[in-house]
Length: 250
View 1 (tube, rainbow, N blue to C red):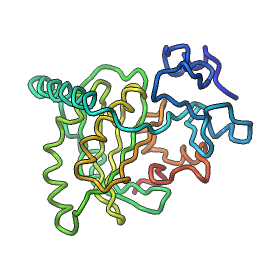
View 2 (cartoon, rainbow, N blue to C red):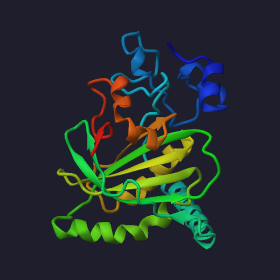
View 3 (cartoon, rainbow, N blue to C red):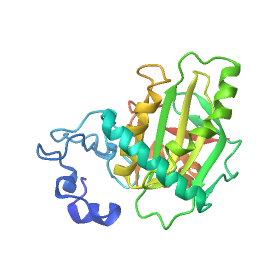
View 4 (spheres, helix red, strand yellow):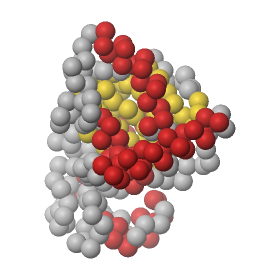
């Protein structure tokens, strides 16, 4: 059953009118597409809602993957992030917890990857938690090149940690298909999507064309997902993208 306006506001906070009732309307802002929950996949799809997409716990909606931001918008966002990162460093609010480092994350496509780093910031209470998963495959990197990338990737921290809403990131090593993933917690699904679309422009410089993807899972905390990865099996259809669907943590 689609969320009514008051229910959506209760679970996800205040949103503009175009997001109420899970409707897609022509007057909504460009780049927004609300997907129907897979709990309702047996029902008739409303206009503007894609088939074979994934729902989230509680019967919510997954925003569709959108194209990267325009270059000027991406550059402005990244510049603001670098400036915010400098302030966070000065205030000593950036940390590298070790709780999940060394864990192996197994995904529904049969691949797995090891967590080799975590980055987190000291911040207030997360009001609108969501999980963001990003994947990409580096161009012309083989063998020892992956170890070099994992080492130098720490230098990329200023490109994400200062974005509004950032909570934490797990850095995953390359899987057996050569793909890297980042598993984030974010405060605000729209903020997470905005970051992913800005990051896309940076990743495109070093990634195989067509290998960059992201998924935003609103209403879900990352540690809850890692503790109970089976929660996604309750809402994900068989034809939903498998690369982001965590099935096990070893």
